[in-house]
Image (cartoon, rainbow, N blue to C red; front, side, top):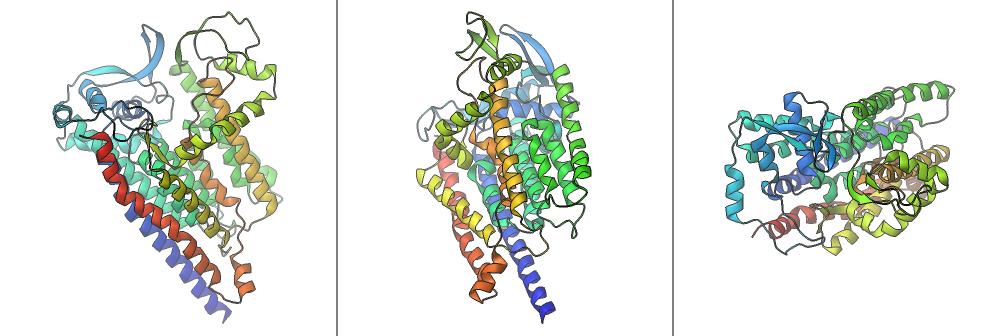
Length: 495
């Protein structure tokens, strides 16, 4: 009887996992295709620079090149001049938050962009902020552009094919994460289906790939060591590649230490630390070959600068930022804290979805709906079971919560050092989407009370029923997004 019951439970769990995965593929693929082909090329955050970074890989450009301009030195890559023109031919400038205001793209401009041909001549394209990233997550876009070119497409059409390849990569990795996770599928489903996540996935911005990779890492860490002993090391390997692009997320690597119990803890700590070495080597190489400070108009240091206030600066300066922090170490905590408090509403919207160049707001009802859906997904995770999964312990949950908090501080401070003017009293440049990479690890914090709920109610399917009901608002919001977003994009970008 016990064996039969476990077989039924295992079958239900597999059916739930496969059903949710298929639903994710169907909805996200449809929504992503609409975003990929209805959003003009270049009208996703920083996409022209990401396009240049991606396409340059086809010419073997692993590192960028430094280049002197009238404003000073910056970094970029060499790509086909026709492709460089096509990457910006459809870009629309729009005030923040506008949906239906001009300017928009007319049929004549679309036709002119489509007519741009390959030139066969490579030119320098500024791509600071993208060339520093490890190229692995740009490969799908690069292969898509190459496939389009081999198929006879012109540059603009080839760029849309590159977007398609990026989307397919995201869907495959996301589906693999959902099917592999031993618990937390509702939360992963919600995070991977957010308008912001899918918008990034359907573009050349590598953040979409990073979100999917983080979800896969989180899914691998749901496995019990006895059931899948290699899971944590596979997750660490994937995360090591992610860190080469985003070193501030490095502390999340140590989520693989969970469960903390065990005599091999020190050995696991050392082995996990070794997975951070590739990121360190990449950062050193990037600093040597590619990195240039962000150029600014001449300015004097801000109020927190402990040195000469009349000093004239022309760029950001990480060393100067470190000096500001060391002058009062408490700023390591207070600067991120006040930035999050003051910008929380904006971060929340950007986390759910502010599209374009952070200038295309969704309807207000969507932010409320998706916020409720994320809570419902967390509740669905709460009523999950622990069959074949790593057991929940409060010590492990606290440990991961500390890692997430420290990572948030690291992300905030990285923008203070790299993007904020020296001595600034407020961190500049943080966006809510940066926390989408952190979010998949939250599922490891949520306790799982499914077995207890079944015993308390006396009904063996109570937890499964509650979990299914909690998923209804998540699926509903994903369907609403898929249904309404295409029309919103057309009204926003095209006449």
